[in-house]
Length: 414
Image 1 (spheres, rainbow, N blue to C red):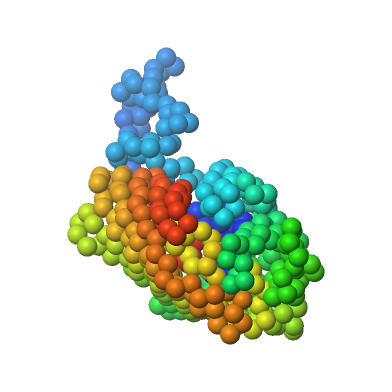
Image 2: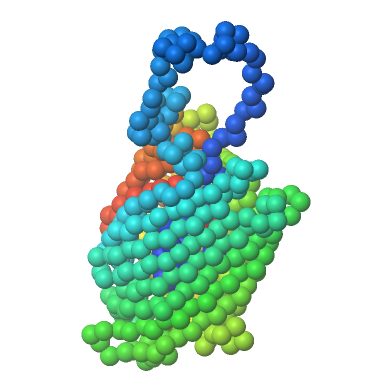
């Protein structure tokens, strides 16, 4: 399920939160099958005397405290694998470092339930809320899981909130601030996996009710149909996906490709008729034993009578969200990661993006926009391959830093 319009990632906050735990791999490594135990000393000698120790060695069993579950049994490093594998309730702090919303903070509660027959299939329910420095706030609920013996992968989210962002139309290059209040946003997908389960396809849905306003200036004629009124959107669509990644959280090898289209129509409850198209490629592989790369190519397009804030935008580390919008958008990025130790790695990344304004000419053609930077990662959960760290990027608007949980592209990937 892909969401990429002007501010969907903030309108449905739980999808952002869920992306940090969106892998079906949050489960313990499959236990090794144990052989049948032979007779023990107690079996041979009979029950112990009343004053005898229960351990035949005379040493009482070692007791571990709560913090012990955060220490890896192999290298004794800080590690969350065993804690995540137990399922149940997990509190998740959400630190937002996006300058478009003046940073912010959120908190979520995640309930994880692994399938005993397939530990890689985990049903996830996440509830949470966030607030940012520019007054945006939201709350929501997200759920994903599997049905029909794992053949069907479903995802659904519902959110409510207020989002304040800047748009940069051709007639106002310095930006116009607008605020959208969402009564609700409901999005989801249901992908059916084929016999070769790397391939899947299925329906998408997207329904929202919101009102948008612009404060401080007269409403521009180009935006008159988009603000100052309640807007309903309703879309159904179809997605075709391929996924061979070794780990959906922090991939090191494999490819994720998908093509999606969503169609907003009056018959689905939409006040506006428009279409959203996405074609994405993510590829990962090793260059040497300690060096690997990742590459992404995103193509986004919107057609029809779309609200200006749902035009896609360049999506690169170092580029402010929604700073460069258009009816056709390309975003590409390459990163190279050097594995220093088993736990620690450093990376460098760079990308280029461009927008085409299309026929409506609300926005201007951006030309090529470049951004890049570096970062570091720590392997926070060895058994599931989950990294966390920070990226430091420089782009057209200056310096930006991001806290990362999982891969930086995880929100856009399957």
